[in-house]
Length: 316
Image (cartoon, rainbow, N blue to C red; front, side, top):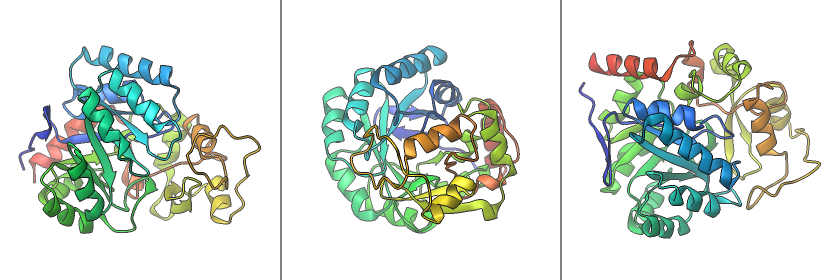
């Protein structure tokens, strides 16, 4: 199978792969730049970052790519500082803004003002149509196989054909893709591109601690669970002591609050739980995962991941 290019407005990615924006601080400049340098689209996960930190990450990513390649951000609509984060990114002239964990009409005005492509993450035909009408340059259609916060319990293979049929803008499929065969299958179902999170979380350039990356490699299919996130969505995670406590409704309640979310159940502090995992605490941290992370058996450099993906797809 010959890989198509991915066109989003005036942007052209030579390889139709979008690296998922994984917070907190898994997807930083080094990972985004490595993906962009291979012809894909690299995303910096903005959620949980201060504005100045985000500016530095965007500038570092540009520096690492020599000003070439496509660099964007991913931000949670549920974050209290969502508008500030995407405005900061737009001022830094990122190529695109991907937004999930909620839906915001305000982001389209930012896109128009700064000439930045807006790419919402949706899980239904209804939201896909609304996004297109409001001026989205593309959409990410995300199925239940995705990691982190989920907007549906339906498979990407079920919702993708319906969404592709409903809109004229590019549709990027997300959820469960870890191999070239997975990418090819989603492209054949009509996707213009494929977003991959888990495969890049388990990369050398991912900003997770070594303990976290080794934890990915040890997991099995039976370790994949869904917890109730204080954000208000289901969250796909790896079963560990913290996730088990969450499933039992016994996760430690916050003793202090940074008010990082617009709405929070306060069942536990998600920003601190994700940060602990990113720093290597896989016992008391929350480890988000895609449904097929357990299939990944090696931590690889981004360059090698792309080489293998292209080789696998070429054989199909």
